[in-house]
Amino acid sequence: MDTEIVKLSADIEDEVLLRAAGLIKDGRLVVFPTETVYGLGADATNAEAAKKIYEAKGRPSDNPLIIHISDPTEAEKYAYTCDVYYRLAAEFMPGPLTVIMKAKETVPLATRGGLPTVAVRCPENRIANKLLSFAGVPIAAPSANLSGSPSPTSASHVIEDMRGRVDMIIDGGECEFGLESTIVKIEDDGSLVLLRPGRITVDDLTSLGFVIRVADAVTDELRPGETALSPGMKYRHYAPSSPVVLLEGEIKKIVSYIRAECPESPALIWFDEDAERIKNELPEVVFYNFGKSSDVLYQAHSLFSLLRMADKGEHSVIYAPLPTKKGIGLALYNRLIRASAHKIIKL
Ligand code: TXA
Ligand code: MG
Image (cartoon, rainbow, N blue to C red; front, side):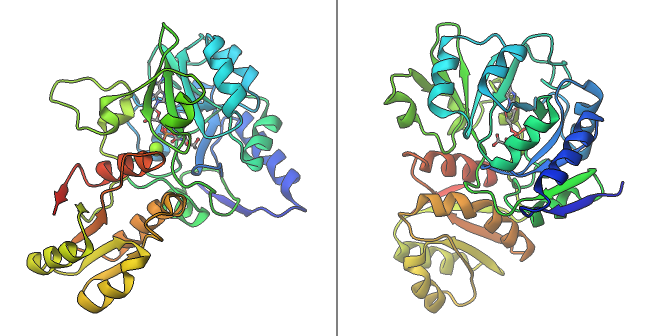
């Protein structure tokens, strides 16, 4: 398939987005930027179009897609909305929040991976929002990476994975946040379950009076035989081909540990304040700067990009820090424990 790649600028934005909306209505695939990561979009109401998404990504067909809408009230057409949904929408939509509710029949089973529920999100990114308005249909969109590789946060990542597999790639620059949306499920009693942490944190939700429980799979490994609340949780995610190992401890101990292990061509994703020391004391290690240790927004923005970059270095191992589970740290923690398949060394 020929893939048209378009770099957006103000003078061509509407013309390009109208054309992209036409492709979506035609059942074709368009990659577009959002404030979290790039999405691989198709008409969510068209089962055949949704199936093309699974094919292009190499994604198992039981892993459901998020449907994107241009206005929170549109959710009513596709899900049984409730008071709690409207309270969430009033606080966080448009924005990086996905809400799971009971689905209406208007969403084909192919889009929701055969589940009775559907995930709904109203993105804040101007390009995404305009594309949705122009299309006039909800757009099903998973992250626009090949299944199992880190989500794309820039058009160059998308091009690496998706050129030749989709009809159009809209290059809208780097995604602002860089990790996927926070996903919550509304339970029958109106409480929430956090299925995937993101920029909107547990504290953000509890401080507004929402009752929320963090699903075990956000931080822990699934036990054998346990079923995942979110099908995506059971697949190894964000996985570079070099093994990732998470290290916790003072820099002195990290340096000694890597020296003692003596791996061939290791990489270390670590904090800015220790850069000099690492370069001096571990000259054989390729160092990838993860920003200041206190700057979680920078870390969120750069994590997937660094993992892709480190992966190209053909390292025998990629070491990275074990993040805290506090605030946005929980989103970093969740992505990194999956990238490392839960390999954590406490020093
Ligand atoms: O930020 C985002 O959410 C991005 C952008 C493009 O919007 N999208 C995204 O989609 O990350 P995806 O497909 O890569 O991740 C969605 C996750 C998957 O793990 C999937 O299993 C889960 O959401 N999911 C979707 N629908 C669900 C449902 N009805 N019940 C439980 N989990 C669901
Ligand atoms: Mg994904």
